[in-house]
Length: 174
Image (tube, rainbow, N blue to C red; front, side, top):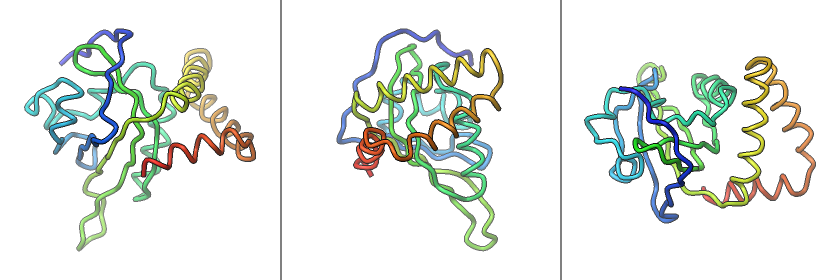
């Protein structure tokens, strides 16, 4: 299945509804709720068994997913702001909480659950600028250079009051 060409039209999300999906340990979709299907525009049959990257927007830096996979593959949960691509080329920004699922007998990771919610325009503006910078670094240098920039950025912003306010705003959703 080929990816649609992105168009500059945002899908407005219902702030009271969650987009939920589950994947196996390799990232293939095993479950998606009705709101996921409604927002992304794919049918359940088009989604089940496909890589979750089917909805990845090209505006998303690779480093975000690199760090995300490093974290969840260790069984640790992580939150991220993500821009996704719908089947018709429109986009939607979401705050996502990723959780690892493990086999109760072996402790081995068997999959992941992602719960997503809409996010404020203020947070999107800040994150979109950061992601654009990361994409530029990836294009002109490497994913490793982008990762270094992101880590340095987060360290620098650690004491920044506005950044702390943004992070608190993000965590209000959960």
